[in-house]
Amino acid sequence: MKPLTKKAKLVVGWTILMTVVGTAILHQWQFFALGCASIALLLLANYYGLLNDPDNKK
Image 1: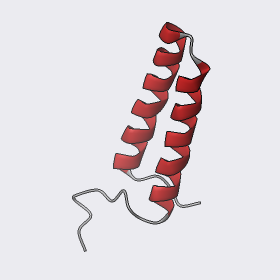
Image 2: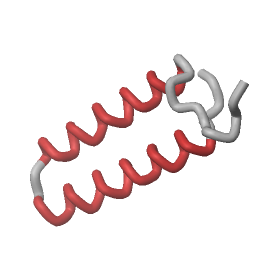
Image 3: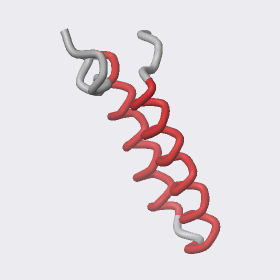
Image 4: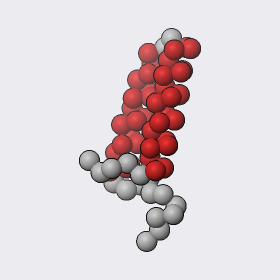
């Protein structure tokens, strides 16, 4: 697995925070499942280089 870029770390961290808070407040496990699916898609996008930082232009 490729290391997470700065942007990917920010997005994954924010998604985890919102998933935990939303699940705790709403008490709906569907929200938790959606958060887990979002994190999986973000990790997949990072693997294929779709979450590049703007300052890392080639």
